[in-house]
Length: 103
Image (cartoon, rainbow, N blue to C red; front, side, top):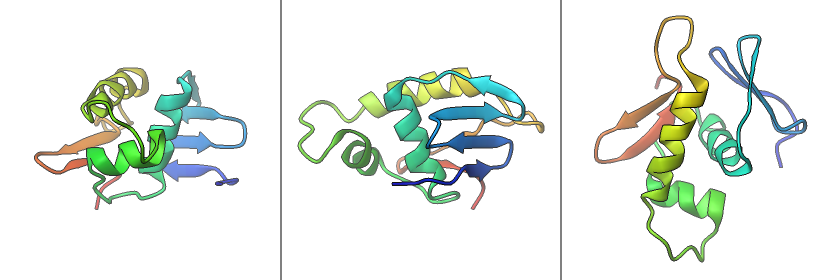
């Protein structure tokens, strides 16, 4: 259980208050979107596969399609927008998975 804010560039996540800000702007996320973003933000620069994210955010008994991650990543990208440099917060590493922050 994370109790301190996670900061990745302009992205600030407060796990205790369940709040996300991009700079000073609050961003409303669903529980699943928030947990997915926390999973990525806990490992800035590290690539997580769909399987890694499903196991961490949903659970190890998930029997659905792992592409559900892609849907939530798309929603997160729309809601978060871009940082001060005009870049998105979540990178796709083709054929591998997703990451936040630069390696």
